[in-house]
Length: 96
Length: 437
Ligand SMILES: Cc1cc2nc3c(=O)[nH]c(=O)nc-3n(C[C@H](O)[C@H](O)[C@H](O)COP(=O)(O)OP(=O)(O)OC[C@H]3O[C@@H](n4cnc5c(N)ncnc54)[C@H](O)[C@@H]3O)c2cc1C
Ligand code: SF4
Ligand code: SF4
Image (cartoon, rainbow over all chains, first blue to last red; front, top):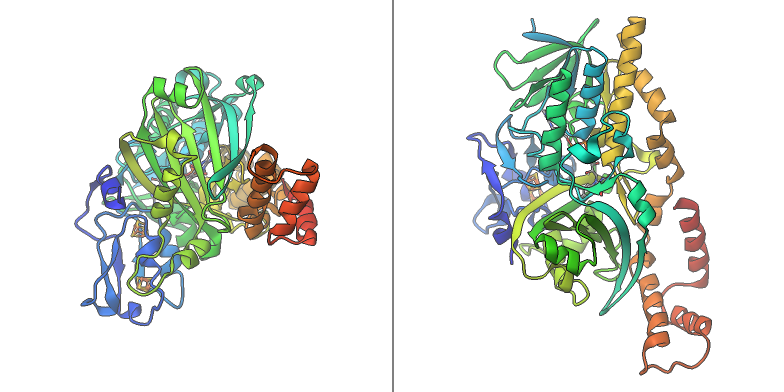
């Protein structure tokens, strides 16, 4: 099982507007890139040809808030601009 | 200009917010409950066990009426060490006298909101709160609905761990890795009878399992298994700061994410028999506040009170989580403060009154009593050396292959001498542990 298989079990009502964005310029100087292993939904992917090596997709976000804490709130990182998906949009859990 | 007005607006329909709104409606307040999800519970995740006596007064009939999973009669603590596991199990039929149940928030929160609406609460789903402002004689809740500003006397921010209300008003300080743990969890379809068999339970009985010691010596990382009626939940929790350094294997590498640790945990020989084989029905990820009493973030301003996870009111005791009941209690306390303000026609002291009452409540008394526990649980020896000592001691007691000469306490002493822990460490940790549990 990979987390991608697990994510198949999750539903989203994806918004047209991204609730989280990444300013790739900030990623250039970020050495350890914790987003690659701390995001539980693998929204951050390492791609050589992206500025700073980061490709970000908001669609599979499970809205945990981790990237706000480890990136947006870290003055040495700060590529992430974080907000919650608008009312009625985003991840929808069945069980909780 | 605002578009609607209420006495009190509660932001977030988790149990903390619903309890506050329910109680206020009960007291004849005109109260709005604003929730960003389409349906209650859709955004919410817990473990978990509800320590339910907190609902006795508000909804005395909840054990019969609410969609609960299993009545918890057994708790297990398991220390992992390599191929071995040392466990302490506690099963007690007297626990049946206490209304402690496993639950799934998807079902529970929907039921609780329905009850609150019957009570007179105005429920506004699919409505995200963007900001809260305080003016001279009122507060205003700004939502993402068109013409969606709501005026009120006071706001209860019950919007969970990443609280919009707390962040936008500046009540909550900026959260950093040290303040938060990450959790990932799977809900697995096992089937009712198979759960009864696997976990040795009667059909309505439930059990809770907490694990530490994997990977060896990694502080703050733990796992849990809870039994629901037909499903089990299996999850991993770890401090964000630990996960950051544990996972940073280098550039472009995905390191060791928490979901990979959970996978490996589920493959351990001692764990697999409980969790194997069945279909994963849902995968979830969420943050858990990890404050000690002394590092709790701010929780009030003039006309705003933060309750539940929004105020960081969660205690990871190492052997159990408390947060569901703390949330409900803090919501009730905020409602009581509002009743007082209304009676005195003095809303500017709402936040202060809430905080004074909360300080006297069992929630903050509990957290105060356990104020040293979070630091104690960061101690690496708890996750490596000590499970190792316990394992080696038991191995020398039970294994026919080891050189089992001497008395048990001598074997324990030898295991201890072979470990990395020093004698003073043991004394110090033992003392701290006793003091904080
Ligand atoms: C893995 C795990 C295991 C746990 N196990 C246990 C356990 O066994 N026992 C226990 O007692 N506790 C446990 N806890 C803690 C417990 O789950 C939480 O403390 C509790 O759920 C907090 O409830 P709450 O009402 O404060 O917040 P939440 O349940 O998070 O509710 C917040 C609500 O606000 C809404 N919202 C958020 N932002 C906005 C906005 N801007 N506008 C409108 N609405 C908004 C959300 O959609 C949500 O409905 C566990 C937690 C985790 C993560
Ligand atoms: S942690 Fe933030 S700054 Fe660093 S690479 Fe990831 S997104 Fe960029
Ligand atoms: S909020 Fe959580 S799931 Fe969403 S992108 Fe950030 S870390 Fe990933």
